[in-house]
Amino acid sequence: MKLDGYRVAARTERGKVRMLTRHANDWTPRFRPIVAILAELPVKAAYLDGEIAVLTAEGVSDFGALQEAAAMAGHAR
Image (cartoon, rainbow, N blue to C red; front, side):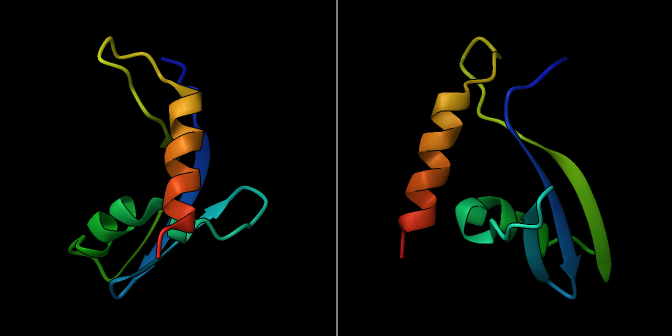
């Protein structure tokens, strides 16, 4: 399955999570809900590499919806 999303690596150590793009941009603030879930993993440290995508009701990735969600989250305080 090909998803149309953002490739992000998540590094977690002792509950602190950073989400980095392949160009090493820190996108942690853009994905706070995912960061919160990863912070709860029962591990001392982990490196997760994957694709973040928004899926429609039909199960198809929607890149526009992902961009909108990431932009809104990045500006939230």
